[in-house]
Image 1 (cartoon, rainbow over the protein chains, first blue to last red):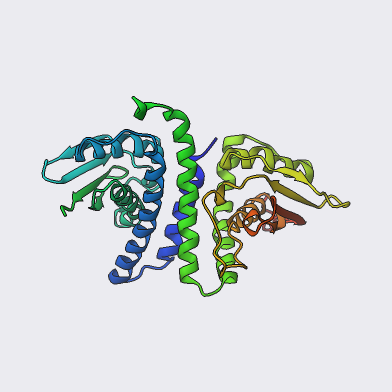
Image 2: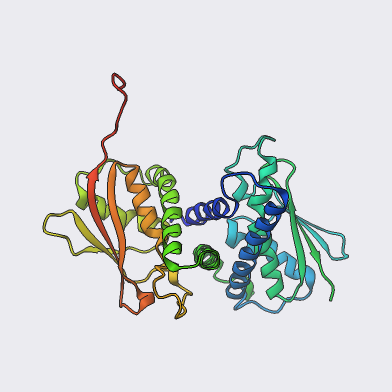
Length: 158
Length: 180
């Protein structure tokens, strides 16, 4: 079953819908990114709930992050995060060297400024998943060479 | 360890859940953005159409299915190959019109509505209307103009979900004169 295709098509249609065809101002773009991110947040919450239904309790924060990198990522994109780094002070960097939602964009530098649109939903997914596991965070993403991508998770201490 | 168990089967299910939930988030957003259900239905159809015109290439490449002889064959391909491939369900093809230009796809379960309940104030919302657009867009790319609509929906309390498809016409390709 080509089960990743429907999501990919739907995702790009969502982006198309929210951002529209024309280039709007920075403030507008920011609002739209927030909109897509919060859609992802809700989806992430729902998914993690079903995924962790029968798992044992997590030991600590790092254990949670490993679960996100392995199991959660595999469910979303059929591969694991390639590299996980942390400063042990609440910052984690998740690197995906071939991020699925960027792989259909040209690999050159030409569309680099378009990349944030395609990452917002996934940032939301991660933040939503973490939030339902009791970890409050801020998730951002950056791309320097397509289709590799780094997600930075900043844990918010309560 | 229990965490490792059943991973292969889970992944498959989870991936379709990702699609289902994302679709849900989209419909929710549309309901916020537009004032009435009619507008939402229209927008879903439009987005479906955009997906359909691109999905058909992916479909033809994956399935390596050639030209269909008639509309009946098209109906079978849609139900048995396309729905199976992308949504993991196989609707049945029934209720053919005597002229053979109209049929119904009956879905016993519709993966799009897995976690969905319609609130009372959205009684004209056609939740899965995206599918109509997808079918219309995809068939248009293979020179078939069709009319697609939902006539029954489990979300509204019907027993099954029924999509009615009507063949309108073949789209002739208008090639410029002298261009083969």
